[in-house]
Amino acid sequence: MKEGPIVIGGVGGSGTRLFATILKDLGFYLGADLNAAFDNLWFTLLFKRQELWPPETHKKELTELLQIFCAAMIDGFSPNDSDLERIKSLAKNARPQHPVSWLSERVDSMLALNKGSLNKGSLNCPWGFKEPNSHIFLPVLMESLDSMKYVH
Image (cartoon, rainbow, N blue to C red; front, side):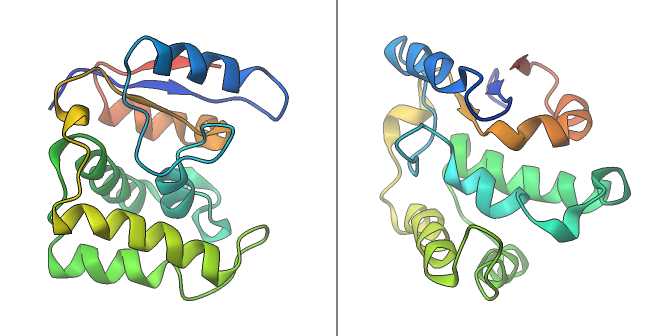
């Protein structure tokens, strides 16, 4: 797997956007679906769900979701049928702060990679992502991503 990532987490107003801006300016790929604050919305789609709480009881699922996320971020994206169904199912029900339409846009964005619209620059540059809630999943991230660096 490609070296990295640098993961930026924290709480609202803690400066995460500043660090994401610095990484972008240094040439890091932070994802193809970002909001104005540079949050990686694929991470939000996959991980920011109440049913994954508490995270330590969902280690297997979190590890599988992380493999999907990393494939979308660095390897190109060719989901198998099971992963494709899993991704699509994440947009079936609204979540606090995220209506079905918003979730569906995230799914479409991820699946567009499968149709060849991958930002080829992501394959040849350092990478990372910002999602303030990433600190909740830090044990799984640290265990799964050997060369990960975390900024809180």
